[in-house]
Length: 462
Image (cartoon, rainbow, N blue to C red; front, top):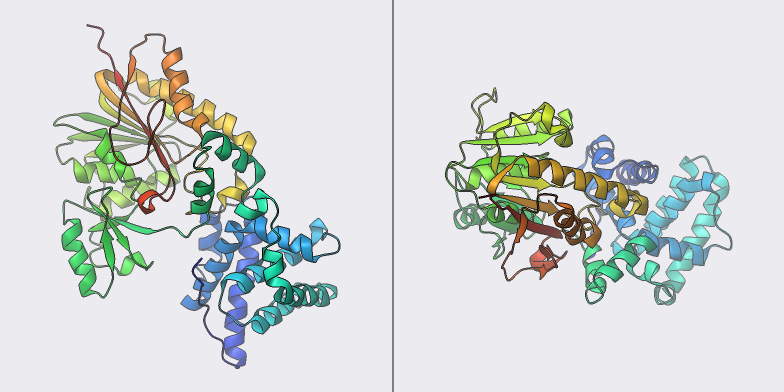
């Protein structure tokens, strides 16, 4: 993995305080994630509030690194301790995990990392642990190579919880090692160029003028990959709606839905609006698109994205998208009865295909969640099918690599379809893997996240 270059510290009291702030923030953020909070919620509340960009960068690196490599780091800590720490000392455990990650992956001098760790322990009020942490970390620096070679189980070697390891091994016996490897890489920084304003080649030229390197994707025709992550708000034309941040795999959705003139389009589970906006950008002939989302707060993000991308005015009244806050499965209470030519289901799922972008998934997701998600997916499929016109097409999408949420879900739907009016439309492509039903883009393929796609056509009764 590429080493992270933390800001070098000067021997001044002020600079030491700034670096300490980053480590304190990372410790606080990790405690909240391990308590069940999503990193996407925790980060704005803690890390993004750090004033110095170098502190934010270091805190982000430490938090994501520990969540990505947690199982490997825990194995190392258990190897270094004579007995495990008590649950009430989770802060000491996290200081050890964070410091080990930094000793392995970052360029900060070992002595500085160890000194900061000891200082963090003292600030936590558990001075008794200062000598323990100091001894453990110093031992690690002496035995580092030997300890890293001692990883003797797949959970530690690939840094995934056992249940995810087992599922991926069973579903992808020829690809499981590659999938797990890709899950532990840093994600690519992908842009989607708004084709109503520009195209990938022209925007690439704009980036060159800004001194930024980028690469045009061969997977999706308006996708650009930046060589390095940046604050997207500083990119040319962002405020004016020239581009959005969206993984290249997700950008395949609009192309696959294949919307024609005058088609009525329904986008289910629409927030935060990336796919909704992309459909309107790509298919300028869409007269009307209905986007449905259960969460009102998340739906506000859809409206904000539509406005920024010039797909609606400030009031939202003159938009080609009608936004409805409602339960998708309670369709009889919000649907006007007019069937749709195209329906997109961006189904709630385990998110097992986007672990590299959201490493907290490995900590927060539980095996017991999968059955409940399957039930929700099944209900959404049934509800959507009632609203699809004969000869209409439904595109089912997840960001999962678990077959139980993907091809098995579709197989069950087709088998249980009382009217027997559902047939698969094969996705013929040179990307991904063909499944019993649908097509799977595995994590890391062409630097994309993992996505599953399946197209179903409703057979006309005539």
